[in-house]
Figure 1 (tube, rainbow, N blue to C red):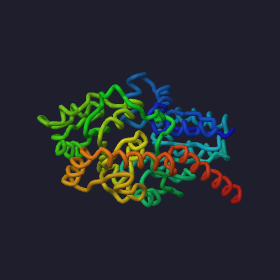
Figure 2 (tube, helix red, strand yellow):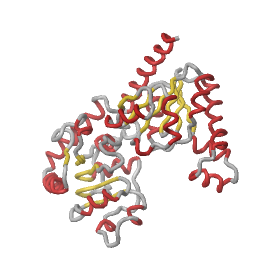
Figure 3 (cartoon, rainbow, N blue to C red):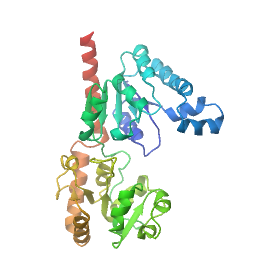
Figure 4 (cartoon, rainbow, N blue to C red):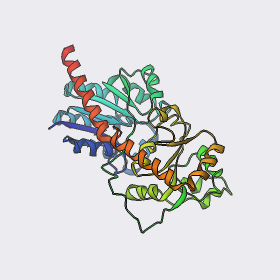
Length: 349
């Protein structure tokens, strides 16, 4: 059985878990190395040490934490090490891993923008056999920062997590004309305030209570919590229009919501970017806007045109789940690359 070690967190909703589910579904053995948990196990001072380590790089502790990764790789000799969000993975550890497990291809799936790279992560870039980025706009930057091989691999639909059939739902607690599911950002607050006169619901963490400006109409629009799993899917289905708003750091996308929303049969109204429209077709598998005025016009139109909205939502769902945009498809691409890279190494030797 082929083996993969995934470096990251194992929460159900995480990107790491989406890939783990897809690898297991494809017949691979999946093992996790959680850098945060490993660090917590070696940090001195218990809780204080863990808190300190979150703000200050204490390299001796990270060395010990990374030793667990080396030991796991030496024992398993996996075909692939998949590092997601490479915080906590040391460049020296990747170098030693090549010696301990020479057959292992070292891949990094970096799901963020170059803005969030720190010095330690940049030091790791040349050690990976292949790095993938979630937006085509970031390929060149990663190469200039030292990555040897960079490919665009967008997010995808998690059809294993979101596989509930669409049926008549008696509980309509998430029903509204317009919804946004996501984290607070200042630019999102400004945009959503201009849409607050619609039947708008916002779902996200406590920042929507603590960081919005005093007197903002959004305080009454916040649903009081984040939505995960089936609640997320239900909110997508029950909202007439689901907004997909980018922020300065994630621009130009496509972001994770570009695939998660249609996977749950949402009708998506998204900020228009070239990267998004390289995948989706405006007016057929997505609807877009480029200004607040255009957004308001389209919200008003689609709220009252149920059949048009439903047609686009179904087409969007079919596009992501049947046209190569699930995590099962992404895993097959990674496996193809890994086989190619393994052959290239053997030929080179």
